[in-house]
Length: 474
Ligand code: NAD
Image (cartoon, rainbow, N blue to C red; front, top):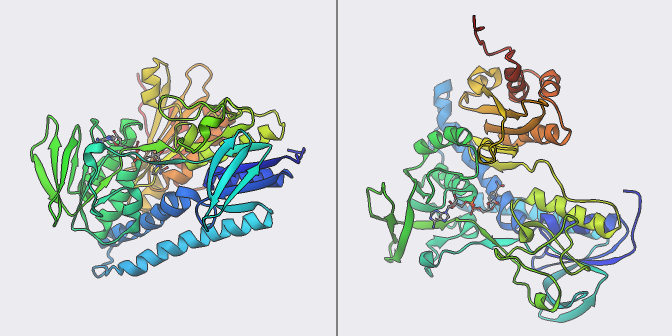
């Protein structure tokens, strides 16, 4: 990226998409204004999403391991949970990271404006600052990075703190005796796991036939089995028809073919049924930006909207609504603005569900291959054959590689097991580098590690995995 640009740009929204865009723009020599209502950059991901949930999931894992340690001859006393201290530790993590981003902004001379932006026209923003004052500012280019918010189900709206979205759940006001989680996706399972580990009786209701509907079933199965032990109930093919505040709890009624108990009272309810793009930006109608039927701002591969001076990135332009997709889109948009020949055309965007075990995948999935009638070879390596998994007492994991039968190129990777979220990056690199199964099999992986399961699943494709015996057909 040798060229620099002296354009004056604004980035609206300081999440991982917005701040990555703003920082790169500053690195390329642009004059940058970053606008966000929070004190520092960070967005939903750092303030009330990825980061606080991972801090709490770390604690959840520790609690779960403290129980499992009995099997290894170590017994801990029942943990005492100091909720105030747990909350302040989580807040400390957020403060450290968002504060760090504030420092990075200053070092790069990014003009950070705490406030909300509205469009006056294609190149002018009116910013209402946190002190109530207003300022109109003009730019050569504007990048919209306004993200998304929790989707609301009208029948599940009640004005009580007992009804929570992900933000409310992360506030961790108390450890409720019982929690109903509506939606068995990323948020429901991650935060459901946190509360279950803290001692709450958790019931998950999912309207579709399986948890994490987007993921391959064989990757979800080990997680489902573990969650069945952790949670009080997992109700599939079920919806919550109504909720009623009874003062001492929320009475929920269930609908679905397999429903046994029609209604039940819960101390709290977490609604996690997806997210909606924040595309209702004031004054956007004064520009040529087009919004599609699902509320996503329409962009081309350079992330440019139908208005040539406005770009848009991240959750507000489409799925997957993931921070790392947003950051890469943000950087691509800025490079396009700088005049570089770029396009956002990834071969693989990793997805990670940070439950225990973690579920991660990238590139082509088996579900997608079946849907598209695409012929693929699937090579699976069960972690029961991994030395490292056995030393961790976590043999339920599995690593699989999807391979093109003709070219032998790696098309997709799926992993379920502890640390899957870290290891999936190897799959992304393999796919982006057009690696063949033999490239992965011949890459020396350190022993004993879980990463060897990626190498051995590629060996499975050739029928030569060291730790799996496959009798030859006579
Ligand atoms: P999700 O799309 O992951 O899951 C929502 C689930 O709710 C689905 O399984 C859906 O079938 C179900 N559902 C929808 N309506 C329902 C209803 N009325 N009753 C019962 N079930 C219903 O959405 P989410 O968990 O809210 O998370 C939102 C987004 O945030 C994710 O799609 C993801 O992009 C992002 N996120 C990512 C991570 C991560 O990367 N680890 C973590 C949290 C959130």
